[in-house]
Image (cartoon, rainbow, N blue to C red):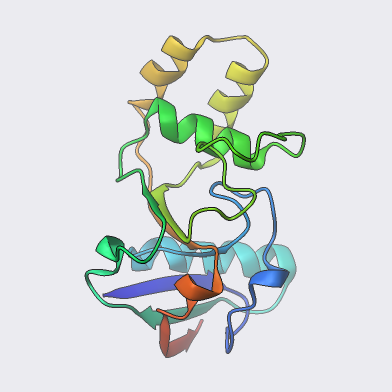
Length: 170
């Protein structure tokens, strides 16, 4: 399987320590199996940070999600209540219940897979957190959003499964 990482740089080595915290699934290295999604991310990153879009391609075994030696959280491709709470907890700088299975700020999961919380979803989360909508309304509105998918790698063990195979400069 090929996974794509859109950036403004050629990722020669994955360095987890420089990854940003408070992302959808916690601090980690994010990829997608959708090439166009990674291309869009590369363009966005280059626009924000400068440089040119770069698409990094990584190969990984097709059955990596069933590796029993890894702790994997798989939300599939459909946004659910559990997924929404997981993303909100990971994005929350003040969240402190690290034992909660709906949090990965402590990198308890090696790999997480699920929908991307795009800008439209972020607005819904904000409405929920500010009590403008309740959990039922959040779930109802999430079902009408079309989302992309992402894989996040949070530990050296998980990252070691990725093999860089190509880089495409935009």
